[in-house]
Image (cartoon, rainbow, N blue to C red):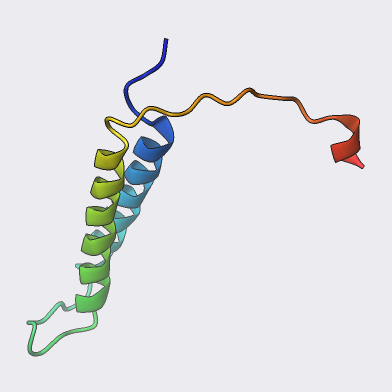
Length: 81
């Protein structure tokens, strides 16, 4: 039975969201400041939020797109040389 979602896209999106959340949370250990007087934690916080948003987009795009089944061929002796 084929799933109605792309497992690869969901996993990739989840990894992006986790990485973005980690960087955003770690950026809160620094002074963030304001948009006019940015502190050292402002850019890591903003980039972490962008990465998490892109991860949500990747996961959402894979929700209704099933993976294409490709036959799995074990590596032959020629690929080991």
